[in-house]
Image (cartoon, rainbow, N blue to C red; front, side, top):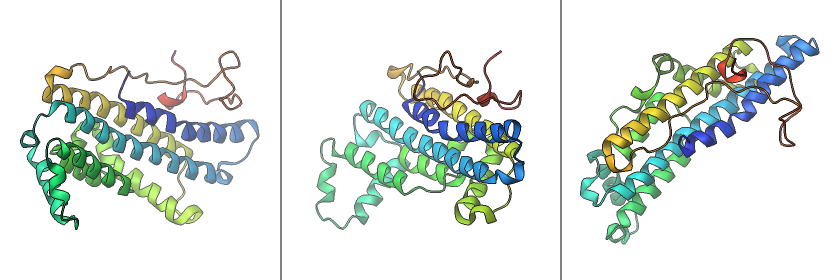
Length: 250
């Protein structure tokens, strides 16, 4: 299976998928005009961004845990990570903090500082994620993993989500087509990141190969009466083509 972070991402994305399905159902089954359904699009934007943010946070902590097991000494850490840990220790007002680095204590401090930083993240744009993965994993440019399309669009997506979060229905109107384009882009970026991160880990730590399985279903069909369990929402008709994440495979 892919990374644990990817599994969590797919689970969290369920809210956005259901909101998109509800939007289609209201328009096509109940005849409600799109202009009256902006609240569903805005809600889905927030949920989709939450899944994206959580994925990147979880992925960082997941790769740090793997790196901890494969790194024998703090001197073997990437220079950027050593600088980050050293700086955080210097900033700590507890005079006894340096002693916590003894033995394998530096591993605990490394993960603790990274966890603290991910919890403070609330704008998962390209710049902030690049800084996060550089400081705590020693990657020069995390966003090099992204698709060309995603590289250009991630920040616009984060900007639109921020406008919705701060201004609600006073924000720029985002259409359902824009939302679905954003969703496809986010899913595509997440798959590409997950696969390329596995390659990066195997390059750094050959002994752990393969890190995780790089099989990512590109399509997810709507539940059907024959397969739906009690945790699924009522079946809703999906639109024809348009978004790989909203349609069953052929």
